[in-house]
Image (cartoon, rainbow, N blue to C red; front, top):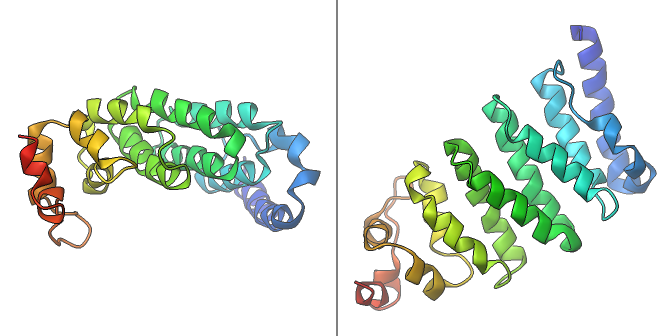
Length: 206
C-alpha cells in the first residue's frame, strides 16, 4: 500500500468512527471490511481495531473476537497490546459476550508471552470492575502466571480484584511479601499492602 492510499484510509477511518458514535448499526454487517491486512501501516491497523470495537454486537462478536485473538499473536507488540485491550473493551461493552471475551483473554494468558500476559491482566481489572464477583474463576490462572510478569501495574492489579480473601488463598507467601512492601512502579511511591490496610490480615496467612 502506497503512502497516499494509507493516509486516505486513515482519514476515512477517523470519519467512520464519528459515524459509528451515532449510527454504528448501519455498518455492523460490514465488519470484514475493517479487518487488518498484512500490509496495512500500523496507524491504519490501530484505527481499524477501534472501528471493530465500535461495530461489535451480539451478532458479530464471535467474528470480531476471532480477529482480535489473531492480532494478539502477531509479532508487532504495539498491535498485540491494542488487540488485547480491544477484547476487554468488547467485554465491557457487551454483557452477553463478556464470558467469551474473558475466555479468549485466559487463552492468551496461557500463552505465557510476557507482554501479552501483562496487558491481559491489566484489561481483566476493568472487567472485574464491570462484573464484580462474576469471573473469580480466572484468578487462579492469573496467579499461575506470576513468574511471567515484570510490569508493576500488572502485578499490583492481581491482589485488589473482586474478592481479596479468595485471591489471598491463591497467592504464595512470597507474593504477599511483595505486595506488602512493593512499589507501584508508576510514581515510585510505596504501595500500602493488605497487611497494613487490613489490620494484619495478610500476616495471618503466613
